[in-house]
Every structure is written in C-alpha cells, then in structure tokens.
View: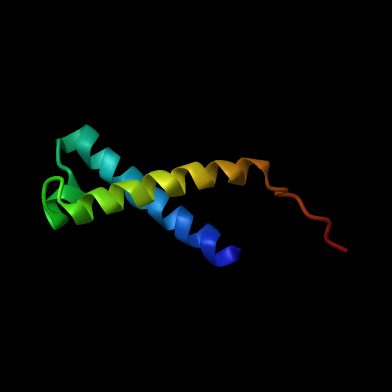
Length: 68
C-alpha cells in the first residue's frame, strides 16, 4: 500500500505544479510535453485526477501512531 500512496502523492504534486504553472504563467506543462489533448495527455490528466481522489483518503489515515 505504501507504493500506491507514494505514487498517488507524486501524481498529485505533478498536478499541483501544472496547475500552478497554468495559474501564474498560462503554461500547461503536460500539454507542452505530450501535445494538446493527445491521448497521452488525457491519460496523464485522468491519472492525476484519480490520484487526487485517492489522496483524499490520506485525511482519514491515522497520522499519530503509538510509539512504545
């Protein structure tokens, strides 16, 4: 499960960086790399979206574990 969490977090960070670039500079990095709404671009956007939905579950995880 840890690998899935790290992968989801990485995709969420990529999405956040891309949205920051769009917001500040009107530059879509994903579209610049893979083409404007090509199949690969749409897959990347879909994976980032799914990772974002999965990352919502991080709020429900127990962050404080008993250390004995």
